Length: 142
Image (cartoon, rainbow, N blue to C red):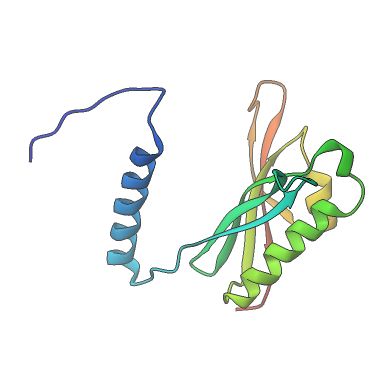
């Protein structure tokens, strides 16, 4: 097989799609499991524009929350909790037994801890002066 490589900081989404498609095919060949499904709980403004929400996926019996953002004006009103609980309920309906995510010091670790998430890993000084925390929560016993 002939190939070339290209280093870029502007790969379009088709490159991501190709990589993910091939990686998932390989993972399926090894595990026999092909259950990756996207999941989103969106927050819309009065004009119907997406202004926040949760984006993630379920796979291998786990929910992964990739992104969660609540606009400043909606914070401390239960919106973030509602987004996460809706995603967790859907994950349970899909047969998931756990959930995981990552967050920075300056983001929402205490918020996630209040909702039952526990830190299982950390990268210190990422970004410099802060830490990145990896967190998980049991949704259902195996």
